Length: 137
Image (cartoon, rainbow, N blue to C red; front, side):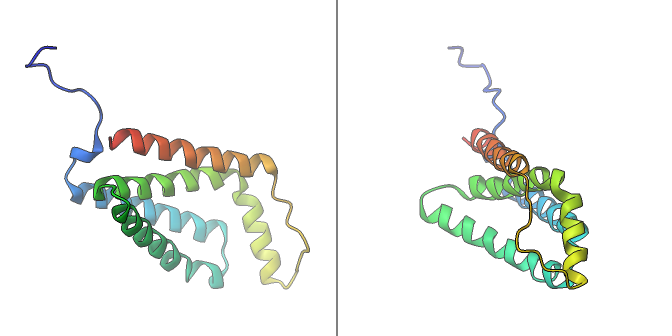
């Protein structure tokens, strides 16, 4: 192997942590904005950002406790939010309809969430997390 050859991998672990925090903040803002638009219930979108921020802090602390770097955990959080937003996109219209029904007092026994939408969401989140893992190793 040539000693002067540069490693050309895309590695987010070598990026300054400030940029990773900015990426996570943009992903968080985009995700919470999308959810507030898709589920326009005040009782949902007021606590939702705090819940997601708490999950992110918990994820970062747990990951560091388990030996992962701060860069890996912040990147994983940002990518997970991006994957979740993309994964929930096909169901956005149903969310809005259900939110308006709830606001009008309509209660359903079961919400018909399509299995294909759930599978798409799960696959999307896992795929972007694998990508985040690959980019931070």
